[in-house]
Image 1: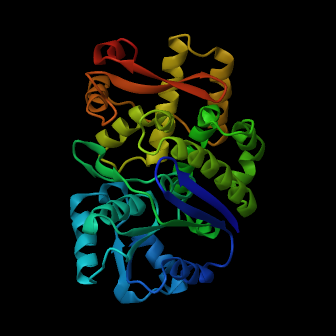
Image 2 (image 1 turned 135 degrees about the vertical axis):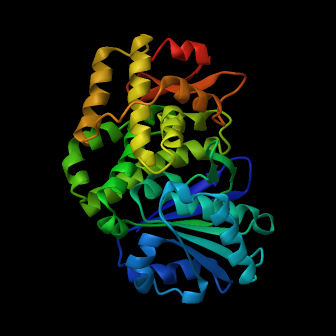
Length: 357
C-alpha cells in the first residue's frame, strides 16, 4: 500500500490517501478502523452498488444509492443525502462515506460540508477520474441549469481510500474520462512546483498501451504520480486563490460543453480534452506556444484515442463561459500553455473571444 499525506498550509488540517491493489474484501475494515466506532452512512453510485455492495458488506440500512451521471449532482439528491443522514441521527463526530466516481464524491462531500456545519467525510473513488483528481483537494459541489459546480464548498475529506481493482470493471467511456484529467496533469506538471523533474508526459507516452489495457501496477504508479501533483498544488493553495487555478486547464471551455450538452452527452474528462484542444489552438494563434509543442500535445492526445467532438455555437459557449464561477469583471479566465508542461492564466473579454474562434 502507498500512503500519501496531505498537509494544508496555514491551518492544522492533514489527512492520508491510501493507494492499494489489495483484495477489496479488506476495504470495509480499513474504513471502519479510520472512523472508529462512530455512526456513518454510505452513499453509493448505482453501478458500484450493483457490482460491489456484497463484497464490501456494509449494513444495508446504512446504504443510500444515487443514480449515475453528472446530471445527478442536483438539489434533489443533495436533499436526499441530508434526509438520510438525519434519519440515521448522524452527529458531528460521525461520517458520510462516498463510494463511487466524482459525482458521488462531489455531492456526498457537499452534503457532509453542510450537515451540522460539517461532519467527517471519507472518499472511496471507484473511477480513474476520482482516483487521480476529484477525490483529493476538497472541492465539493452540485450543478444547476446555469452551470457546473456553481453551488459548493472547499471541504477536505478525513481520508481517501483508492483501490485500483475497482478500475477493472469501469466502462471504457468512464475510463477515458479519467484519462482526460490525467493528461491535463502532464501538461501542467511544472506549475505544480514539486521538487522532482517533470516525468508524467514521458510516463504517458512510454506506457500508453499498458494504461489503455489497464495494467494494474502501471495504473497504481500513474495514480500516485497524479495525486502527488494534486497534493503539491492543494497544500500551497487550498482555496484556489492563485496556484490552484492551473488545475482548471481545459475546464473553462470543457465546462461550457458539459453545460450545453445538459451533462448527459459527454463525460467530464472528455470535455476537458476538448477544452485542452481549444486552449492549444488559442495559445498557438496567440504565439504563446510553437508548433512543435502543439504537435507533441496533440500527438499524446491521439495516443489515447481522443477525437474532436461536435461543435457548439460560439455565442452560446461564450455566454456560458462568461457565467462560470471563475469569470470576473466581465472577463473569461483561461489557463493556456506556454511551454513544455507549463501553463499560465489569461483573461479575455467575450468580444475578444468571438474574434478568436
